[in-house]
Image (tube, rainbow, N blue to C red; front, side, top):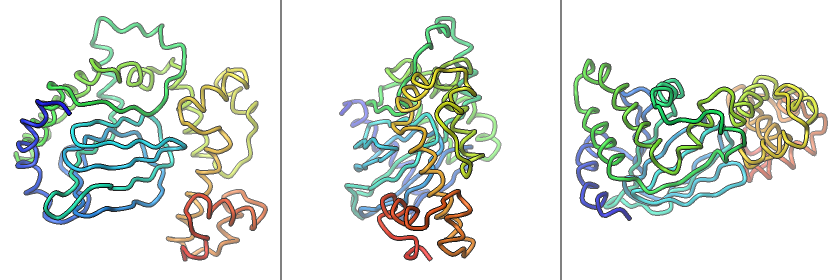
Length: 294
């Protein structure tokens, strides 16, 4: 662990804990920032998680994204660059020493503004795909940036409105000086291979109940089927078919839970023709049968 973090950890806790009296997630007045407190081990449900950045202030957590599992602890940052089926489990937390984290929705516009303001970014080098996931130790500059953002949460609405975009850009600037640099750039630059995969992910999200071959999807982004399949799996840890299946099952879960649909109605609505196949794959993903979700 970074010794600088150890010295400054309690500055962060002193600013964050008064804002979190209960064990739950809190939205804040800083756009895209959640602060999270858990005072016991906690398992989240599987969901389609949008691109995010997690900074663990205290405690330990296991983050499952696609087919990859990342364990992280205090003083570490986890980055996820694409929407992915995810779940998480707080491994280490108690009432005396709760799990505390700052969770940022990645603001691609702000990050892109920072990238294009730099004079040493070689966009032409973004010719291959990068994994969506990364974990690093927070450096001194980034820790200071997090402390300033935590302090801003206690300021006036106007202070937050004016200063938070500047402080978030500062955060992205320091992240671009870490080993996450290539990942961040690859998701922000529209001509990159990662951004082409992101285009397909957004297409699948809008058309999850249709059937597409690898050839169909590869043609949309002008890649060969083999290259497309390889890049898609590199970025998301899943094949295109596995990813689309996850989107369907997540939507089916939502329909059953919030629209009171029957299992068969949900299955057919998201594109399944076999109820038995739907039930089998649903249980594999959620560890319960769809009937148990009603």
